[in-house]
Length: 163
Image (cartoon, rainbow, N blue to C red; front, side, top):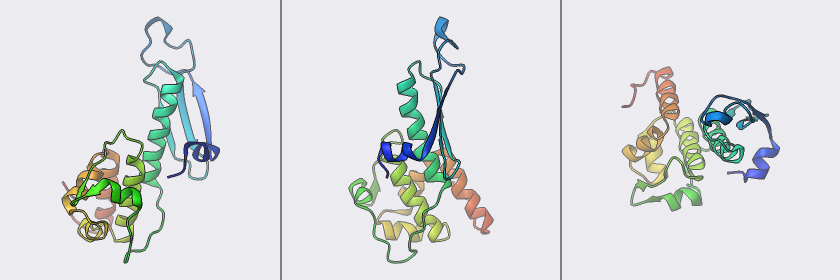
């Protein structure tokens, strides 16, 4: 949920040459961007655009998503109140957010933090977030790495994998 400037103040940004689109200009300029969150070591990288600025924006989004997946913030397992952002995005038990939208990492982090607090049980979490369990699982499935993490955590606890 940090604004971009505050997040980048906690990060190290590297620009480098990498393969990617660009035709005759390939490998001639440093358009690749790798951003590392210093406190956690979590990274976001982008190389697919010819513009360094476009790659920087994509790298920031990927960093936020990776932080949502790999870094937990403790939340109470009971009596949790969904954030204002969550309430905006969840209407009539349906969650509406595009994985490319800037709100997606914060929504995903909120869901994963509460899942961690509730031993990775979607049914319990969904009731606290006022959405259906299937909508919660679909949200996590929007990012394949998040879904793998959910099933990994469930497997560690002897729970069946979700599909």
